[in-house]
Image (cartoon, rainbow, N blue to C red; front, side, top):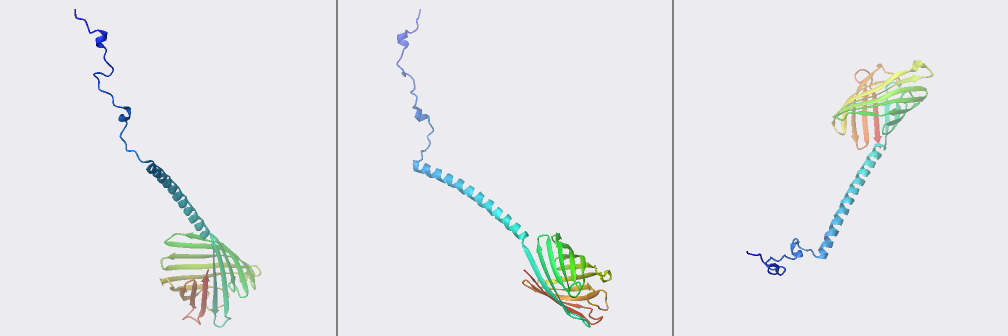
Length: 255
């Protein structure tokens, strides 16, 4: 009977007849080790990139906020204009008509003299409205108080319709004389003009007024105007060819 090997024969020295296991360190991936200085530089570069990105975001936010503040400030800024019109009326008294305006956003303020009547002033307040981009409609309904030789109130308006080089503008008011209703009347001034170049315009004009008397209830004429920087000069000729013409010269400035 064949017996198996004895325990002594079966025992072998540890590791005899087996492949030796490699050291544990040899099993780790063979990754290149950066020097300590290079590792520190990489960390500093990463931190710098994070700081720069945060600074850029903050700068952009500050720029946008500043732009918003500037836009709000420009929309709330005041704009002013002043004009003087000289009327040369045949067989009547010549006179000068000064006008001042101030606008801020929707608010419109205006002061006039020798407009509704001679030796008479008026103060106005209105609401500015604007519609459209290419075809632009601007409308300002107003209410004024009249005082002087004529005393009363006057609801009125100013309006303009602009498309490219064409412009249609009108202003009107109903003068209510509180002292004598017979002196109440409707006043209007309307222009249709074309600007072939930016600094020059020409067109037609009509006017209805009781400040002076002519043979026509509604006067008609033509206009020629030019602009230089903030200055504007316009000459008007009324009733030429029908009767002795009335001449009006207007100088205006915006600031």
